[in-house]
Image (cartoon, rainbow, N blue to C red; front, side):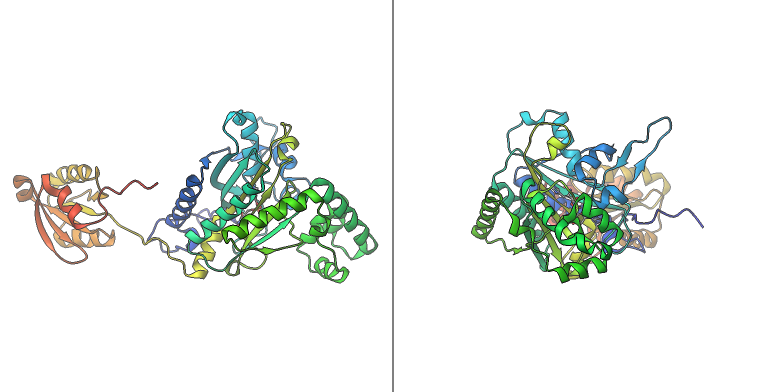
Length: 439
Ligand code: HAM
């Protein structure tokens, strides 16, 4: 058998591919990224890109030693003659904060809004919507603790899902307080769980010492049963006065703007850097345990990475999960389109002339040409397979008279047009000419 792609990865394929799925269609990824780009750039976010591999320490210190990501899911990168201390990035936030610190971005006007899209890597148990290489759209705001920034970030996430046509999305909003609130909560959890140590899964026994809050996020049924039996109090009960006031302000802004959310009093995110506001977006079509996206505030992260204090907040969507949700909701995706103009020569000596015509037309439209002389029937068949709107066949007559004989592949309409008038003709007959710049 020919070599296969690694488990948990996907190819993003061109339209027309026989095995095309919603989450493997390259054009669908492009559509989601473009939709997010438009919304985020209108809100003032600038694009940033960071390396796909980073120092392992960045992820260990950033994402946190008690998380599944660091303990079980890191892809280590080895290469000849190197210490092997790199890993493929499991998320975008730590890399962006590193880039902010390393490149003196604090000189830029604050708050600084950044966005990124690209592949992320986690060695997870593979299932629907859970991959080892997946793709995120990530938005980060640095340099402000203002609750208005939190509310705007959440509202922008909702704007993106709305623009994608998703309906059954719920925002689960919570707060995990300031570090001292979390310490108090963890102390409470330690006291609560320690007498039941033998009932906890091995992972959760370990969590009890490192970060008890993570037990609440356990995937073990036994753990979840114990949590329910013990009637664990939620993190929200432990918020200090400042975190509580901040959380109240975030809700107030969202209420003012009509952004709907449900309070989730015991939200636990899968990364350790969060404090205060934390949230997730869920969709029925993707499964109860799988979020479309999530985010939160991480004011201590820059210091954890060895930099000065920088406030930060952000979120990320998983593009594959957005696409699965769009499919479940029957949301519209752009139709696959072919060229506006397809040109084929009927004789070998006119192939280069046909190619030159197509190249000329590319100044204002998508135009393709046949690389070999074609018989009339085959040329039309080829034009149709490629989804062309207009097909032009070039024989010696057309070359001599400087004209094109055009046929509309959808309506059958025929026209003879002078080479110099082709642009005007196509403009009058299609809205696709000179694709207007998108902004
Ligand atoms: P996260 O919750 O770990 O947050 O991931 C965000 C989203 O990425 C998830 O909600 C999900 O849609 C997608 N995702 C995560 N793992 C997988 C996977 N194995 N397969 C498919 N999709 C996946 C973060 O990554 C944070 N960096 C978000 C953030 C930005 N917080 C602050 N700023």
